[in-house]
Structures are given as C-alpha cells and as structure tokens.
Length: 481
Ligand SMILES: O=c1ccn([C@@H]2O[C@H](COP(=O)(O)O)[C@@H](O)[C@H]2O)c(=O)[nH]1
Image: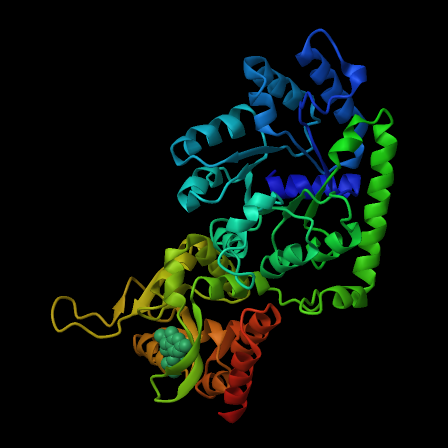
C-alpha cells in the first residue's frame, strides 16, 4: 500500500487529521518520567504517547534531530520507537534532509531498513536531491515550503509580498512529484499565507506546523488549509499537550473540536468567502491541478500570438514542453488514457512532430502498437508515407495535441486513410472550440478532447494565475471569432 492510501485509510479509521510528533526532547519530558537513565525516561514517555493517541491520529512524526542529539542511544531509541508504532499508522520522519550527496543512501536506509513511510526534505538542493526519495513508489516526501521562524521571513518573503519565494517553492516542487508522492510542509500561524499555498496547490497534502502560537485562530487556519473536501491538511497535536497525564482525553477533545469545525467549513460555503474572498473552494475542475501545473511549466502562455492561419490569439499552447517534465507528462498521458480506454482501435497514430512523444507514451501505457503518418515524404530510402507496421483495414485512433482549425490532424488522418486504414476517432488534449469538432464530424471523424480552452482559461483565472485583463482578452477573442 502506498503512503497516500495508508494515510487515507488511517484518516478514515481514526476520523482524524491530527498527527503527533514523537520527539524525545528532554526539556519537554514530564517530571513523572524522570529516571536515572534519561533514555529510559524518554522511551517510557514516547510509549505512553503512542498508547494514548494511536486511535486518534492519522500519522506519527518523529523528528530525527532529537534522536541524533542523544547520540548512538538516541538512534537506538528511534528504532525502538518506530517498532512500537502500530503498523497501519503512517510514519513521517521529520529529517528536513537537504544534502544531495547523501540522498540515495539515506532514502535507502530510511525507507527500506527503518520502514518509514514519508520524510520531510528541504527544497534548496532542488529536484536532484528529492528524486532519490521518489524512486520508492510506496513512499512520499514533504517539501518544507514555509516556516514560522521570524528570521526566515527575510528569505521566504523575498523578493516581494506579492510574489514571495515560499510560493515559488510550492510551484516548483509540485513539478517534482505527483500529489500521491509529494506533499508540502507549511509552518505558519498566518491563515492568509496558508490560503495562498492551498490556492496554488489544491491537490497536495499539506502538513501544517507551528499553528498553535498564542492568538492563532484554529478555525481560520482550517478554512485556509483544508481542501475542497475538508481534508488534505495534517494538523499537529500541540507539543505541550503531550506532557499531560490524561493525554487520551485531551486529544479526543481536540479531535472533536477539529471535526466540528471541518463540518462547519464544508457545509457553510459562505464562511469561506467571508474570510478569503479570492479563493473559491467550489466547482473545481477535475483537471485543475494539471491545468495549473501546465501553466506553471510554461505550456500555456498569454500574450498576442499569431497562428498558422494568420489570426492572432491571446494565448499560445506549447504542449511540446511536457517531454521535459516526466511528472506532468505522465498526468497528461493518464488523462488521454481516460478517453482512449472507451474507444475501439487496433493501433494508435501520433501527428508529427508535437504528438509523437505523447503517442509513444500512450502506446507503451496501453500496450498498443503505434504508427505515424510522415509530415514530409523522403525522396530517398523507403519513401514511406507511414512509419511503423500496419495492415490495411485496421482501425487507427489519431492522437494530437491541440485542435485549432483541425487542418493538421485531418491531413494526418487522410494519409492514414489513403493507406487503407480506417480512422473514426481523433483524440486531442485541448479543443480550441469555435466549432472545430463539428468540422471534424463533417469530415467523418469523431473528435474527443481532454480539455477545452475555456475550461483552461476559467480555471487559471479562478486560481489567480491570470488577471482579469488576460481573462477578458480571452473571452472577447473567443466571442469574436
Ligand atoms: O496554441 C497553439 C496553436 C497551434 N499549435 C499547433 O498547431 C496545430 C493545430 O492547428 P490546426 O489549425 O488545428 O492544424 C497543433 O497540432 C500544434 O502543432 C500549437 O501547438 N499551439
């Protein structure tokens, strides 16, 4: 079972978004655990915490630094503590690891020997550092995006409040791993900062930290950090609660309070708009995350772009870029697959050049042979019009990136038909609309698309990625054509 499923199972079982830090911090250890041997005292305390909280938490989070600080006995204590955590409860090791040279070996030890489920990582060494942790498909990472340390503001808020570095960390790290494998660690008492992160990462699990400072408002924090379904946010049990002799009682009461607030937030849609008028948790597009990521990696651009027809559009789509981002590429392939699995065909064909990588990815994923019609026929060699093997009479589904006039995809389909193949269906990622699917139909093809350009632009506008001016330029051009 992967981390995401294990976490969700435990959330359903415990009905809880709470997680507990299992930190052998001598300064926080209650006096009743004092023992001639510090490690024994800490061990007894940690075992008490686990026994009292296991039914009311979704995860445990041991902080590696506290164990390391105790030396070799501390690391032994870590292994003993990990061993007493019930196997069904996910363990997130708070390591804030950030050293590229040791990523591979650390990932191996922590994931395969210590059997932890997820780890926290610092972002500054970039994707190269994170990748070795993501080669374990059942495991996950949490990227530190934001901390509540006052001194961190000088970096996190740089260069401006409107476009702070911590939001760039969120945007960039989303490209490193899927939502099932990569979550965000956010330490803040500032509900607005959390809301900004949630707005650009609606699909990610956010592990909240440092939310219990005096004066912080739990309801605002939850409204800002929960996703549209009222979950997706892991909430820390306050550290000082873990010293209480009646811990189980205290955690149950916090658990009920949080679930009550979650219910209110889910049912009281108006409450969200009062607090965060810019953020609408309702009516999300099912491909919202993918649309935002495509925008963030530069596949969707706004400005004046001249098309092959000579017309100027206020946007340009460049799906060719997805080949450099395997994580987004994979999501695109999966989205095409959702349509293709309902169609009947013997082979699939990509239209050169833009759609050849996509068609190749789909061919491998669906285990379906691929061919492609050449863009230009060579005057030498085999002079083939179509590359790949096929038998006349077979049915081919054509895959392309975007339909503007439909000219290029229909030209490709005609070449296939001229070789005796049947083409009924054309599947594209984006439909520019403006009646192009009707045009395909008039020519005997059924057009299918993952997204329409209006869905994309509306989603980007709702998420604050494009401004009103860009949105209006699109709606006007769309009406005008
Ligand atoms: O935003 C855009 C617009 C066009 N393209 C390229 O053009 C064809 C589709 O144009 P038709 O008029 O339907 O032939 C598409 O395959 C792209 O290669 C684009 O990439 N982005």
